[in-house]
Length: 83
Image (cartoon, rainbow, N blue to C red; front, side, top):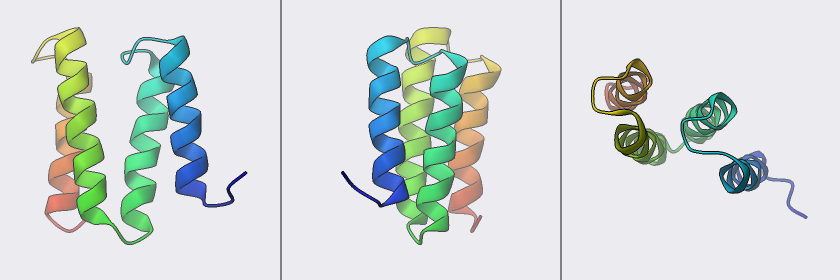
């Protein structure tokens, strides 16, 4: 068992994705938290990658103009601008 909070949250997200669609609110919330935590632990580029992946995944499930998709890309842009 790992004690790194990023690894723990990633494992939780992986479990949620086995149970739910990516557009499920708990999945989106966990994925967003994981991306922000990644940046807060010193990896803003990793956070940008996570937000981009979330946005791309949600776009496939919800369409390009859904607010959740735009929120994910906004998260990526926020970390690209320095947080």
